[in-house]
Image (tube, rainbow, N blue to C red; front, side):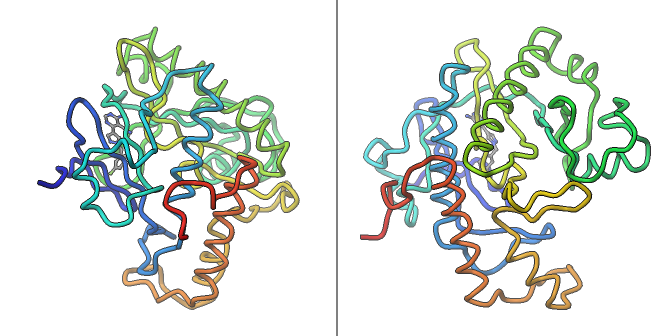
Amino acid sequence: MSLRLVHSGKVRELYDAGDGHLLMVASDRISAFDVVLDEPIPDKGRVLTAMTVHWLEDLADLAPSHLVSADPARFPAEAADLPDVAGRALLVRRADMLPLECIVRGYLAGSGWKEYTTSRTLHGTPLPAGLQEADRLPEPMFTPSTKATEGHDVNITFDEAVDLVGKETAEAARDLCVEAYRRAAAAGERTGIIVADTKFELGVIDGRLALCDEVLTPDSSRFWPADKWRPGTNPPSFDKQPVRDWLEGSGWDKQPPPPALPAEVVRATSERYVTAYEQISGRRLADWYGAAR
Ligand code: PZK
């Protein structure tokens, strides 16, 4: 008997682990320019999983989470049918997920920068004139969105978030996410990594708001190397820049299928993921579950 697949994302899967539990599995697949590439990035799934656990432990005094265990010995026996699951999977509690993407932005990047250039607002809120791309915002901002059924997420106002989950929950979600972002951004800064923005997914477990899904990973956040940050530029992505640069230079039209990544680009990208984890956590990835021995 195999675990039942309940969700399949572009680069990860979620299985029913029985008993009110789920098994969240991060693959080594990578997406760039909205396309999943053919070459796996060695250790990417372990990095995302180890980093989520790092942050959930770091933030445990701020909020409960869905995490039960990263130890494969505590997974249901059927998890052994999944290939190389050690280190890439988390046993978590099933939560009542809020129908919200809880995004917090501390810097002006991506779609936020685009909005600012057209209307000098971020998420509809007026900002000071004269800000540049990648500038730090005066204060981190909660910019929620909803999962669109197809394609990209749709921004919603705070009042629309209130309509979806109620005033008390929306306020608690905002306050929790902004504080979690502040703490992560401050911790990142001490290790030379700027957390420009991040997306939290919250759920309700035992009547309490809990951090769920992956937390403050390169796939749910924008990480910049602090020494490459210059306002007025689009700083390189800590993790994906080798892939993006190579794809941009390849002449690819960004329509599937993507070209095959050279081994050197795969290796450099894997190294960036591992460095991000080790720099942020102060631990060695070799000490995480599933290391090659
Ligand atoms: C849940 N996702 C997104 C994650 C995927 C998709 N603890 C939870 N309880 C209930 N639902 C979820 C979670 C979590 N986390 C998360 N969708 C539902 C997701 C991983 C792989 F394919």
